[in-house]
Image (cartoon, rainbow, N blue to C red; front, side, top):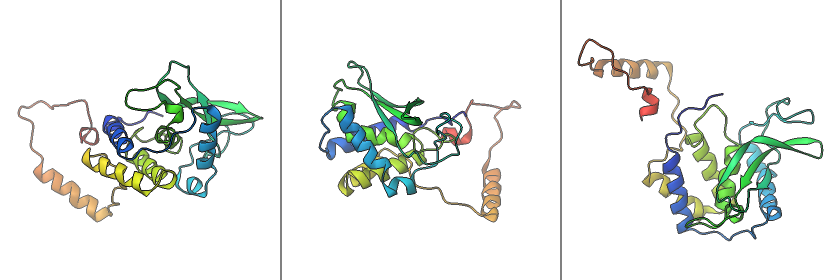
Length: 215
């Protein structure tokens, strides 16, 4: 499935960096075992089962054969010793007869940040990717909302307040958009049609983006 354009990715990264600088959190010891324990605390919680989306289809037969469910566990894998980044992997791994989604965490030091494998902010960021549906932008409002909730639940309200304020400062969208009734949609369409201006020439102009992408 093709995701929509990831229009607020850099703004969300900047908000996370600023919030982490304002509210540093105790680091893990940098081992895979410590990062896995932290991830297991998240995915084993009632909050995660209630708030994450059913994105995982793995079971004992293979990684894509089960019914969609909230990931019951997310495996932590260490990147190369020279790797500084982190990502939610598209390639699952099998352990003890079952398949699991994976996050890969770098072990090298990063500019202005500790190694990803020791940083709870980064671990929660990558976990949030596995709780966000495939059909939305990778760092869109659904991701940003889940990430904010993870920060509030597992780092604390002060950290969440800092992230929410940085979201606002950088115009990161995270709130659920209002649901319009049929009448409201018709009124909105009529209002847009009234204010639409014709092209300057007889040719149709096309920028290559949809109205939603240009916002």
